[in-house]
Image 1 (cartoon, rainbow, N blue to C red):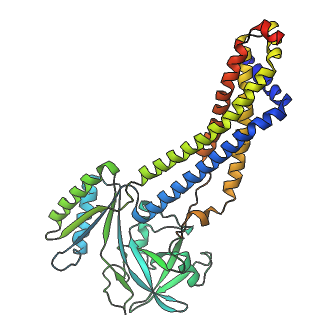
Image 2: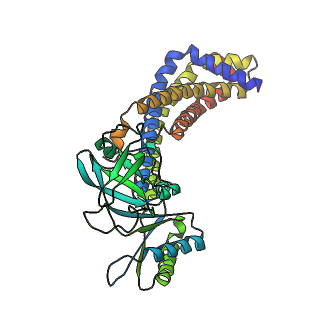
Image 3: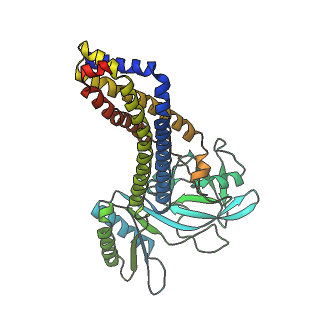
Length: 407
């Protein structure tokens, strides 16, 4: 261990002595590692954002959506029968996450007058299934079903239209119609386009604002048929869809059942291919930078051949000479890699990524700088130094002592 530390200190001293030459040789490595780390980090962040956006819209992999209706009337099945069939299915096959979602409209009394707002009636587990993270407050929970004041989660545009900047004042809103009720806003999400208003309310809630409101514009709500979403392993999705169709067809007599995957299929393969392409491009750039280090290393060994011969004559072993020459290159490229990674982190953190990556879709949880990109940059810089120092080290070891002294 002492010998290695001594060799490392010796290599670092050589870097300090020949700092001008080393700096010139490391320009290419610095630029290559900086470019590779930055591109890799941005690529990983874009892939993560795209994956989360896809999961927020269609559910995590794999999400199976199930809907049912009477083919003669087009009406959904009886809610009690539907709930019973869903409960039996979830219990029988031990499905970890099952959520219901229904689209509709709710008439809210806003400061500018009563307004119909797009509303999603969902189960509490819908938030986990679709990666919904409120930017303020909380998501819906099971206890909200029994609340005398309906709990709603709204988007930022809704809260702004209501005249509130945040939830510090515990804002409420009246659900209009024949049986008005004051609802409590418990959370805020970053969703919707522009000034589009959006609200979430819990399914199976008690009171006149619950399920079964008629589709009459004069009433408080209109809710469409419920779609069941199941989060299952991706390799079992096809089997689950077939099983759901069969079991629901038996439990709901005379009802047409449709089951399909709603999550973005193939997203994982696309993201993996994107990451591979980014790493390949970074490797090419890094190799070009390593060639510059190799050239400088060969020239340096030729210039120091007499010094190496003198050291060999005083008893320096071949291993010591080999390690010293190689570690000189490794220390230099590792330092360049450290500076390049630091510069990449500073650049990426100061870029307006939320405007560049969202494509009009708000991002509630912006990903940070990927640790993997920083680690890859440091490993790549060190590896390039080792490879670039290998050939000069071999040349230094193979030089004969007497010939080196005469050089």
